[in-house]
Structures are given as structure tokens and as C-alpha cells.
Length: 352
Image (cartoon, rainbow, N blue to C red):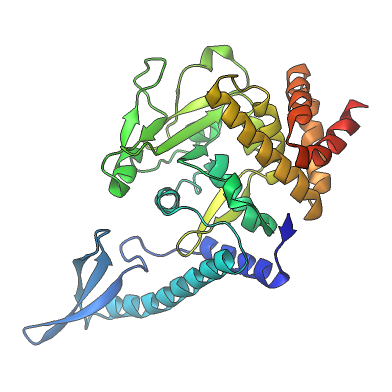
């Protein structure tokens, strides 16, 4: 595990701030361009935007002599320049610094949800896509083989969704704008609510929420008023994972400002759920990925100055009760040998 140079870490911080400050109008994204067109002796502004199929779609904006429109065009030039600079930052960080870039479709999915307001409404990107973001957040090179993904997992606290008094646009509409083959996946309980969406290639977008342990809610999707018609799967231990999340950057396009779990909580959470996976082939594969990701973070976090916070998160989980202790202990004993020492040095202190 190697930390990237200070120059690249500074570049990550600058990119993250610019992405966070991004407030471009959705009507005129920087991927397009304003085009002057002469009609009957007058000049008008049109906006050309890629249609995703190799062509362009053109929209009328207004007369070129309208001062408000001309001001917007001039402002756009600066936004366009910043957009290009951010894309160069992302290219440098992935090609020269060796940080992980999101696969194109995952990046497009997260970008669409971000633009729609998911993170403004205190949604959290979780799962392997969030793990990819720790490469930039911690300034370390993670082996790309450890982070394959064919889905995007997202979470929102149940109480927040009920109380925020705002909502995303319809989730299915957002996803179908990227791929019209997306469909809602029927829930195993037979509920009419759906927490997962899948396209014809098998790519899944799933929403999770907190469940403090009430068994009557454990096998039913929860109604989430803020998620644009999507429900969410209530999961044990999710409250621990998404408490006090952090802001990071997903390296895709010009960089996407995202909210992810604190990496210390993510590492401990992976130990907990690894010990609760099923023993079938699918469960074993997921357990192996959980343990590998936990091990990498236990190895990297002390090196990047997060050791005390990791110890606090581990102690908090340990003190939550016998089931938590058992899951942590069992996973610590089965973690991959290259990370066994890093994990068990900290778990061993709690066992004394």
C-alpha cells in the first residue's frame, strides 16, 4: 500500500472543492456548447449537446442581443474552462497518480443521482463504489482488481427520508434516461414496493436504509418519501456504517462530489457483515471481498493518520453487544494473511 505524492494529494483536494462548488444550471451542462445562428439577418443562440449516440441535439436559447442571455453565455465560457480543467485533473490522477477511476456506466449512474440531489438529501454512496473513492480520499493506490463492481449501492437514513420534506425526481425516470432497459425488481417479500432496479445487462442500483433491529421490518422494503418512488431495504448495522459520513470525489468525467461512509466505519462494518454472510458460493465470494476490503483499510488507515479514529470505531462496534463482538472476532481470524496482522493487532487489544 503506497501513498501518492503530495502534489497529487493537493490536486485531489482542489478537484474535490471545485466539484463541490459546482452549481451549473442543468439546462446548459458544460458537456455542450452555445452556438450562434443567423436567421433573417438576426443572430440567435442555440445550445448543442451530445445525444449519447454520436450525434448532437440542438435547443433554442434566445436572441443574441438579449443582455441576460449574453451574460449567461459569457458565464458559461468560464464554467466550460473549469470543466475542461477538472477533466484533466481526473485524467492526471488516474493515469499518473494511479488512483482508481470509476467504470463509465457506474460513473454516469452516480452523476445522474448526484445532479438530481441525492447527496443534498443526505444520501450516502456505499458498497464497492464507495470503496473506490477511498483511493482519492486517503491518497493511496488501491489494487484495481480488488474493486470490481456491477452495481451501485446507496443508503439513506430512514428518519431523514421521512423528515426532509423534499424528494428526488422519479428514480426509474432518471435511470431510464441512461438506459431505457432499466426495470424495477420485484421484492422477494411480494411487496409492491421496490428497492432495486436492473437493466438488461444485469447492472443493479439498490437502495438501503437503517434498521435498528426490529425484526418485523427486516424482510420488508421501507417506504422512503425522499427517494423518488424507490423504497429501501432495511439492514442491521447500517446505522453504524452511515453515521457521520464524509465527502469525497468519484473520479469520473470532471469528478463527482459524493458522500461516502467514514473509511474507519466502513472497515469495521465490513468485518461485521463478513461474519454474517451465507455459506453458499455467492455468500463466500461476498465474504472474501468484504474481508479483503476491510484488510486493505486496516492496513492503510494508520499509515494515513487515521489510526486513532479506526480504533474508536472498532471499540464502538465492540461495545454494542455479543453479536457484534462475535462477528468481529470471527472475521478477524479469517482475514487474508497479508492483512491478518494489521487487523488482529487492533482486535486483540479489545479482547484483553
